Amino acid sequence: MTPRKARIAAAFAAASASYDRHAEVQERAARLLLDRISLPSPCPRVLEIGCGTGGLTRRLHPRIGGDWVITDLAPAMVESVRPRVPGALFRVMDGERPDPDLDGFDLIVGNLAAQWFEDPPGAIRRLQGRLAPNGRLLMTSLGPDSFREWRDLFARFGLIPGTLTFPPLPGAERVRVTHPYPDAKSFLRSLKGLGATVPADHHRPLGAGSLRRVLAAAARPFAVTYEILIVDIGR
Ligand SMILES: C[S@@+](CC[C@H](N)C(=O)[O-])C[C@H]1O[C@@H](n2cnc3c(N)ncnc32)[C@H](O)[C@@H]1O
Image 1 (cartoon, rainbow, N blue to C red):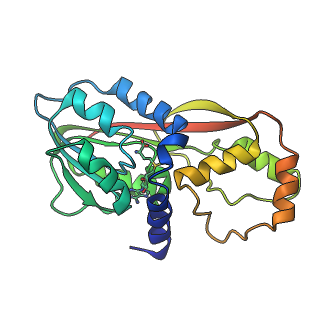
Image 2 (image 1 turned 90 degrees about the vertical axis):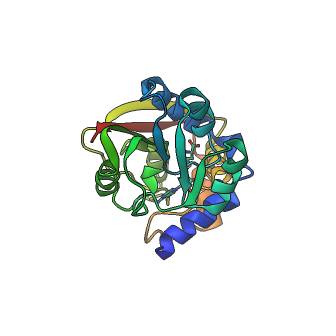
């Protein structure tokens, strides 16, 4: 695992207890996936990437059943889902580099994990190769317009925030969701509560004074755009 991925895993692991309290947008994205999934086959083989605390898993598993392999980069996230899905297989795994023995899935799902990948299009191609002949891959990620208001706020001070920037995913459907936070500090707090704290490469943290000035200048409530990308492909 690269040092950056180890930091991502540690950040999410540290947030496994607080994650669910901050996961409104993740739940909306999970619903976008659920709306698109019909019963793939009577007893589907399902691979989940980046399960987190199981926001998608606990809704989808009872609905379609089947044989599941549930994975995440962060061991604490895998452990948080294990008691909720008896009979499934669990693995700590980098979704960009699926284990060689994982192959022939009827359905590969992942909700808002792919935006943490180093190479989302390449990773999706590799995962697509693990589908059964009539299999389907359905994953959400975040697109370039996400966090626009946050970037605009920093730009007013000539600054760039440490939040990730998200590349487009060719062929993905795009759904814009706006989430209102009471203020900009609450948005920052929610990223921390989720464990989404590893900054973009080469980001230099702001001093406390600069950050305070930026946060004080933000509108209240502070609405943040999430551009949810939905990848829906077959083999
Ligand atoms: C925003 S959470 C989404 C969790 C869950 N799918 C949900 O719907 O709430 C992102 C999850 O992706 C995991 N993750 C990040 N990078 C990953 C990678 N390269 N491979 C697998 N999981 C990864 C994190 O550990 C975290 O649990």
